[in-house]
Length: 365
Ligand code: ADP
Ligand code: ASP
Ligand code: MG
Image: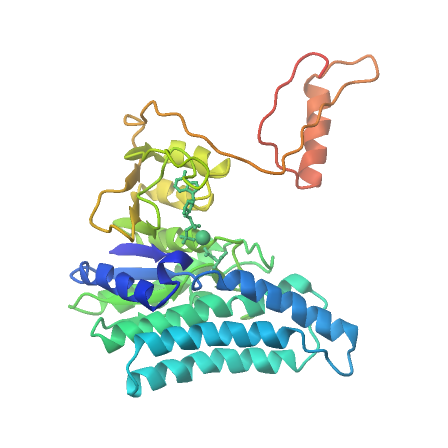
């Protein structure tokens, strides 16, 4: 069993989806679980839609303004145009349109009603449509070209608490869900199977949608790899692998061929945005290797992230962080910056959810 994750950049247009199909074809002889994000930058557009909906509703609860209409139409047109480019006119295209329209109609109906006062809850019920629609289009397209697959609703596989926009995974219930549905899907058959599901989204025990935090599809793939006991996981990116810096900032960044789980956790926790920071831990816990490969050059070796520390090479990595604040804290009484004061300072940081990237302490500061 292999788990693949394709991000928004890989499925941003019809050519992207066809390229993804080409990659998947090469692995058809294996059981595959494929996790896909929303197409292109659609999650950003959906965030704008949520803002507009809430603003419209609050400006005049009796007769909603319709500033959201334009955004909604753009989101729909973007997906329709991909469907039109992917499918010839006929039953395949009709099936894709029909299924995608169910999600859009649900949104339309939602917009007729007042939003709940819980913004984050509203956000998750709307933003999830990006992943639901993208996986539907890809799944229908794969079926149309003979890559037979089954679409699974990730909200029934990955269960979370009700922390909207940052759902905490309930590992026990998710394991039960995966054992009930996904595992029998593979085990019950002699043929190799392909499952397609959404990244980023989960569901609560009362069937409301949650999201796992922006860029969370990598994490979804890691959760499923863990629960399925995958042999390995691959995330397909627009870069040759994990580099020692973000190539958008450092064009001469070099590829790291092999890194340890430990190093990868450090890099992603401190802001190497190529992988979501929560991704590595579940893989490390089961020793499942993670490959970071290029969807542009799929046959080239990317980066492998594995248990061993042996091969951490001596190439230093750079992480560029914007909007940082430097705080100096100095005792004004007779004390030093000792354990007692540090404890109080850390308590406050934790209380206000502030993240410390770098810290140095001395007797007086
Ligand atoms: P996805 O399509 O899966 O969501 P992302 O766009 O989130 O992919 O991640 C890939 C991007 O991460 C790259 O295009 C690159 O600009 C950026 N990136 C930041 N740090 C690194 C790094 N250390 N190595 C490679 N890419 C990096
Ligand atoms: N579509 C979501 C986002 O843009 C999740 C992801 O791409 O990983 O944040
Ligand atoms: Mg991303």
